[in-house]
View 1 (cartoon, rainbow, N blue to C red):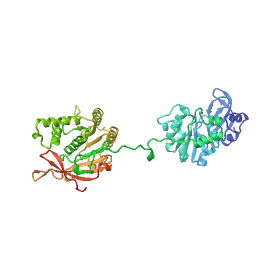
View 2: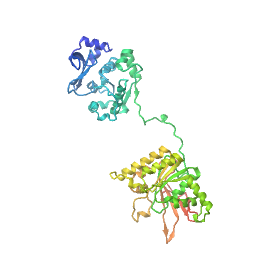
View 3: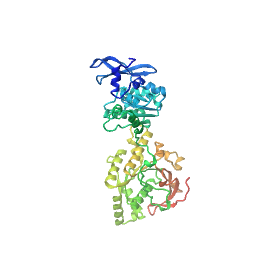
View 4: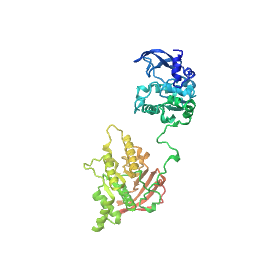
Length: 488
């Protein structure tokens, strides 16, 4: 099939393709047996690799019937010419006739390929695993991957759109462009017949569009976010050194008995009081009754619970009921999923803005037995971060440090000292430590404490520093005593 018959030339000309284009593309003609037709005159499209024919596709002139050589290899048609020319821009069509239409319009033949087997009925989730696309990987390995720009010129029908979508997945969206045919035009060959070669070339040049990529934008494309909502912790002496915000996650650590639960509950009380918001608390070691109830009474009145009268206690308890919700698992075996489900109810139904989990180790039984602790903690922190942002709430985790020897127990723990994972430091927006330099001295109870800002991802939430406190036994609450201490 080295020559073109007059019938083949007339058949191609009726489709807007000239003899010179057929010859430039290496198209041939002849007669062969076709499915359902017997012997038939055909146009033949040879597929080459390094000058050797590895397949031939035949199309009958009398009917839209196709066949390929038995055992022939799937490969982009005209890929040899593209690889030889090292073309930086390549048009990818759904069929050889569309590829010829582009060449007729003046697109260099070394910048055009066609898929070998048309379009699928629908796009697939994993085109990489489909046998029908093995020619794409083969072409990329041979050098097609050096192409800087792929222009996808598929049909406008659903199979053509499915092919285009699969090719984007296979070739990579960063280098993919596409054209959308005008209404009433199905493909490149039809455009050529209706509008002519010059208009087709102009359309291809002017109407090709970058494949849209979700998640990558220029600055001016991004919507302006609302200003960060800031909650001051209720100690005016601290100025702007520490603050909290919805849509963020904080982690608080500290040695057992150093007051992290009491201090953070006082801070949440003060924030709920000052901003009129609600909190939902999963408190696994300190009960809502009687411990948190007593603490909130003392935070409110600045006196020990036993010195309050019945009216004061009742007022504090009503305020507590209006501003706090307590998560309690019926079997005392909470999971993170249970906590988040209960928190969602409190957020959606009652407008809670804060979720506190205290302490984290009570959820450790939730970890799958085949998952490493560090992977599980990373996964859980990702879920908490998504929860905070999706519901616009602040999520706080109180987490104990790992077991420490006698010497290290006398030192302030860091986020990386929390049992299980470096993720406690990497992923959190705000990292805090509550520390008491001395708990007892010469048999006397010491009340000095400090909250240390170990990490702040955002300037609005503060910066690394030490904030000194004293626990007033008479008042039953913490007081700021030296907010000017330098961070060490």
